[in-house]
Image 1 (cartoon, rainbow, N blue to C red):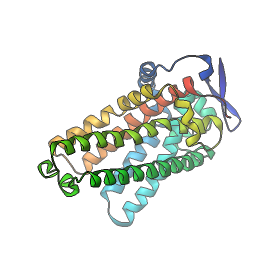
Image 2 (tube, rainbow, N blue to C red):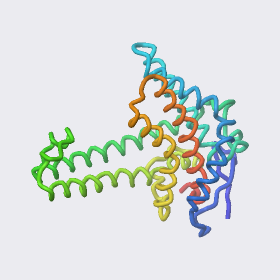
Image 3 (tube, rainbow, N blue to C red):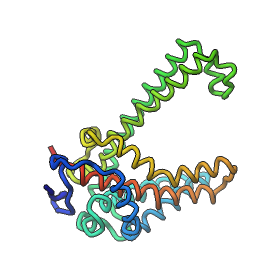
Length: 274
């Protein structure tokens, strides 16, 4: 069973309801997202490139020019984000019906909703990370671990072997929690688009039964950026050009891939607004 995805009263595409019994095919969604990259570039390429250029300028330029570039990067980046979400959910033609601007430059109600929803998700994740950090400090302190040695990477002074084992187990567990929660809210932008209202934690139920596929798919989408960052770390390359390449990989590869992947996930997992 399919239904129209409605944005500001306009039908822009279709999704398959979770009630249909179809399981989310993460591998298939990833392949479709890769095939959809040219469509993403056609619909939002100029906004994506502008975001990368402005962000690089904000990192490289000091003073007022850098601050202005950062503000413009945020504004253009939100427009590019809205463009990616539209295209990922509805395809290029449907995205145009949903308010996609020329080159991905538009600031409509969806962009405002995505900004508000994103801030709510960021606040939620900040609270969780703060709790995780405090819990880690309490556990490390109770175990008598040398926090200064941990910070300096001097494992010989951290403590005996069982304490190092405790440190490893606790670290993995504490890192897993925010990762799981991030995947749980990963469809908030797609829900905001389809439901026509700002959505944050209300999208967590959409990922039931699909957490593993979503996590692996998002990790695969980030692989090009991770490989590039690893190359920078091992070779010691730095400077404005390295930051520029990083921004281009992020905006032209990882971000569109992730939006396409999550758009396909929405088509399988989305449901009517409650």
